[in-house]
Amino acid sequence: MKIEWLSRYSLQAAIENTISEFVNGHGMCQCRYRSEDKAHVQHVLTTIAVNLEHISTYLPPSPEQQPRPPTALQGFLNWQHIPRPRSLRVATHPAG
Image 1 (cartoon, one colour):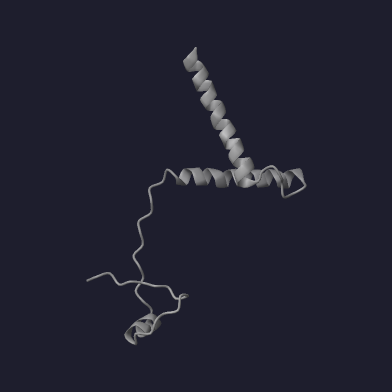
Image 2 (image 1 turned 30 degrees about the vertical axis):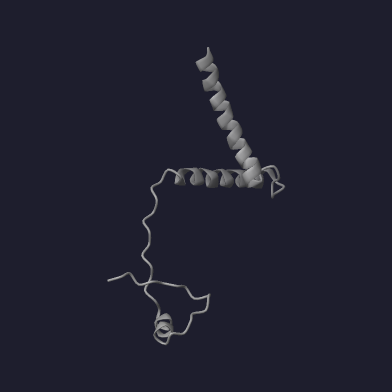
């Protein structure tokens, strides 16, 4: 009896959590469109986005990218000992 109640409650909690995520996290209380067809498309696209977000938590992490070598301008600035502006990307050479 208690196990049956726990299984039903866990299903109910999962459904309520999903509804709460849509309402609070994705603004599904207010629709952006007035027509029923357009509102339906918005709901379907939001659902697809949330499902992709959930699926991405189960995917293995992507391999880290190697830093790019410095550009000619960055190399010149380093050679002349000129400090780089913050807007330029900082790339470090791997040792070796």
